[in-house]
Length: 297
Image (tube, rainbow, N blue to C red; front, side, top):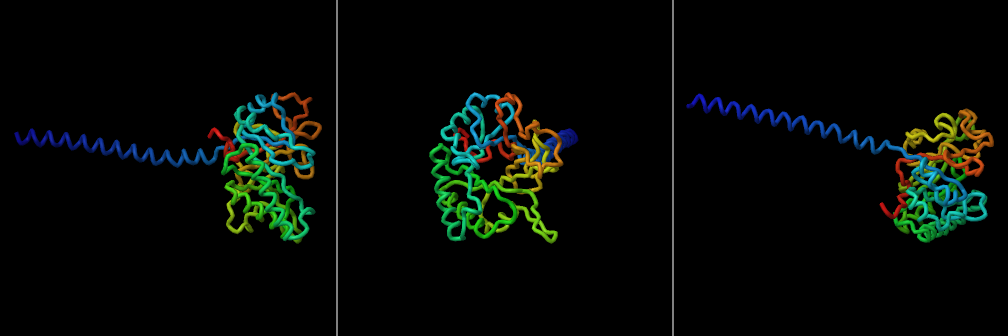
């Protein structure tokens, strides 16, 4: 009887060891899978576009076949007489687009002095917030200030940018900036990247970065890959959005790019008749909704 009990106990103990081994292997597998899943999420990239003029309701379905998000101007885009995006947020959201919400900022010539630049930054922040409310964007949406001029930011430009950022954040939105990710020559063998300059002088402000670099490499040219490059592939590791193709093509920057633009120098998306002249700038982002502007999230 004692021998039988001992044999039975031995079998039970063996089964317990098998279960422990199984659980240990399962736990190890889950631990291994988790970082991979997180990494996949982190390195996903989504294709989007922006343009100064609204593309037309009739083109949204075709554009959505290629792009997951669209630029959306809250005020008049650069060189435009009117803002044709006003009132179109619901149309875009219904078509399945995420948003890249944009506010056209001031050029250096408008700023004059640090005091004036600060005042303009504050008033433009109020205008951006009012525009976001008018268009129905939820609080916490990222609004990107369009900073067209590159190189090292001068004191007036920094005063304007940071006053604008502070005003947008104080109103309950998040602040982003569109700026150059290209190294600009400063003379004597030194260069400066605008995105780095703004970030290094931001005093800890939380700013989301949308960088432009259409030089090849790192840019791939006017292409629409199913697996887009990551924003960090621009060379700006902290970028959340990267504009890698512009219309019209900037020949002085993109001379090394393959011949992917149309012969007229513009970048046209697939699925839309080229005769419409619906040229676009092309972006990649870490999110399908870079501004988190969809109400249905």
